[in-house]
Length: 311
Ligand SMILES: [Zn+2]
Ligand SMILES: [Zn+2]
Image 1 (cartoon, protein in one colour):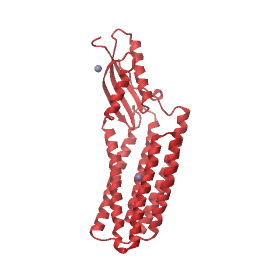
Image 2 (tube, rainbow, N blue to C red):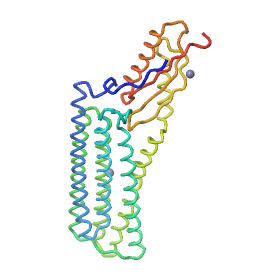
Image 3 (spheres, rainbow, N blue to C red):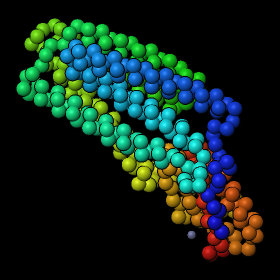
Image 4 (spheres, rainbow, N blue to C red):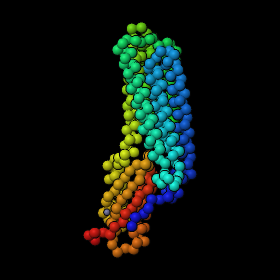
């Protein structure tokens, strides 16, 4: 007996309780405001960086673009995660999030390599123009706004008890550190004309950082789209959970795959051979609901019931 995948209205949605609805909007608001700040900072630093001759500030602007991209992926995830399945997308639309992640990540890799190449060749051929003093102000504005965003996001994350939002807050703080590095490089260039190369050095470092972020975004997307399983301890824990369900013997063939950030599972279980179809069905349904209650990102569990072999 096999249970068919659920139609969408039946799936357990962690956002359906009133408390988590306010969580969703609180989380949405803090993400949207973070994205808007990243967008403004990216445009502002790019303009001042190009007119004020600071490669490091331009690289920092691209870092803000990379932050904006991660914000956009989160928002796309919320949007497509809530789109219901339809006649030509039976598993919903969550993979659109993963595809956009890969495309945006690849775009960012290209930009980071170009930035690193330009800074490297500027250093090599000693073609460095001294940055103007206005670039210092842009770096300071970036540091202050990121620090304020860190404090506010952390407060919201603690209020909503959201690990994702708190992690995002810490990200804002590392962005502030990146802008501090830019500022330090710029201060050096203002101290002495012999130190103007420092701006390109910082730019090179920031480019490598962006490359690392971009690779993380891209490879994460690729892993999910080619059905890489979740970590083995997660699989072990789920198997233990299934084994603990009354009437379930010898769970096996547990398979998992990602659809967007959600997980689909399949598992075989054995039951006493002489119980009724109805009892077997109840056990299968119970297993499914137990897993979905335990792991909120599990969308569906197909439970295949077999008679106990050595019973
Ligand atoms: Zn960042
Ligand atoms: Zn089997």
